[in-house]
Image (cartoon, one colour):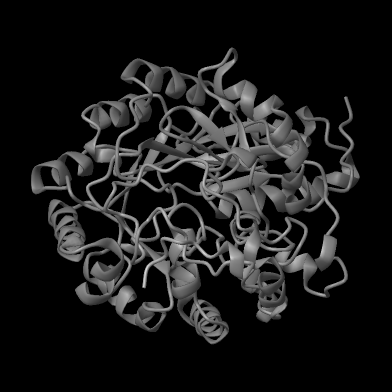
Length: 95
Length: 397
């Protein structure tokens, strides 16, 4: 179960940087100094595509996440949203 | 393109195999220190003439930045006594290498506190080993409690948020945990508790200062009850066998996720293991720090899965993983043996068996007065002769 809005536009938070590692990536927030872990390369790719995708669902498509893996990735995105690694993006149309 | 998502191994298993860059890097900038704490991990006191120059330090920072080492823990010695310390701090943070530095507070006057408040990505950690001057100064030296609390007051007054107060838990201060928390609250700081290691001069005092089995239980219960907003640097993972695991990585990160750069640029597996046995290389070699981290034979071997050795059959092995490598090494316990503070008591037996085998320090920058001098002539060891005819003719008394 997730309360994550997959139809909204998301992005990696501006204060967060990713560092690729064999297992996926480390995410470090320079403001909160919080370290998080992206535990799969596919999740890293997904997060990097968020900023240039119209929605999280569109990013899932672009990252080529198969149908039976989508829910699992959405759960991961929801967790990353809770810890501030990703944030809602105000789309150009809306601003 | 379809990306298949294989089952993800537990993070702790991934970390055992090492990372491309360290998560947590400690960099001791100088062996010089105005204090002579009895338990100093790095046996600091006097500056080493070979310490890295400003330009060499900048080159290290450039490489850390390129490797995306998000922050370094800078210590010493007392790092702020280096004249270029504040320059290096700026140099790092503008390159996205955040700095947390440990200090006894000696240089944190109100002007400096104000400048630190205005700098992003800087965290200040003030060392305090007693919640009262009496307990603190017995370990850290006369006046050091006043110095530390003055620094904390200056930081709070300047509006510096969330400084850290770092406490090495000992037999003498384990009863003061609530008082430490109150001091942290008073200054708007976060309390950090770490483990006493038998490293550096700590080896000399470890037997007298390390928490007893009862003390360890007190600490463990306190951490479970009140530890939510207390940092531990994961240093108490050997206590996990007392019950529920404590939050954090229950793993020795030496050479896998942590390492140490010492003031002369030598790279060791962890801050508690400044000894030739754990020396991986130097940042001054070709390829610099990156090459040492990624290719040194020591780190490669530390990233090879190990058997649990003597602990393999213990039902708690998964939570404590045999404990702290440095604590074992410096107390003469084999690296695949139990932690000297094993909560199930196996450490005490191993200590008894290994008593004579403690390794000698491979470096010492203590000022001459810092090591307690045993009574008698220093040139003549006081241990009893193994045979009566070996009796020293010049023995005292």
